[in-house]
Image 1 (cartoon, rainbow, N blue to C red):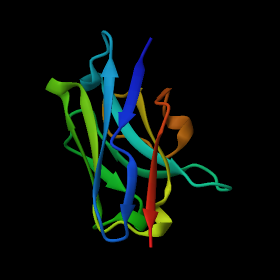
Image 2 (cartoon, helix red, strand yellow):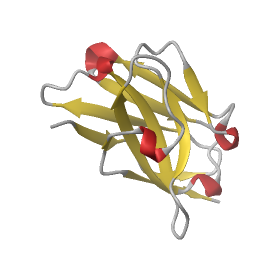
Image 3 (cartoon, rainbow, N blue to C red):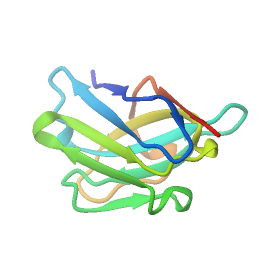
Image 4 (cartoon, rainbow, N blue to C red):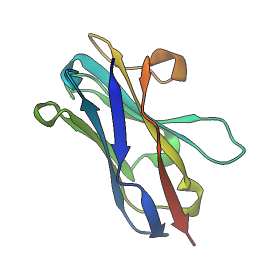
Length: 126
C-alpha cells in the first residue's frame, strides 16, 4: 500500500512563502512515481498545481502559479516538495500530493494519478 503524507502547510501573510513536503512511507520508493500537487479551495473543484516526472527532469506548473511555485524531488529522501513563493490569498486551499507509476512525463488530471495524500491546509491572509 502506497502512503503519501503531506506536511508544511499553515497560515502565512500574502507575499510570504511556504514549502510543502510529500513523503512516501513504507516500502514505497518514490523514484518509481511521477508526482503531482493539486489543490482544492472551499466550494471549488480540485485543480492541478504542479507535477514532476519520476527522474525530476521534467516539470510543469499551472498558469496560475508559474513563476511563483516550484516542484522538486529528492528520491534519496523519498520526498517531493512544493516551494511556494509570493503567496496570494487566492492560493488558500487544501493541497494534495499524488503519485502514479509512470515511466516518462506526468499527468495534469486527477485521473492520471493512483495514490493520494490526505492533504495539508494552506491559508494566505491579505
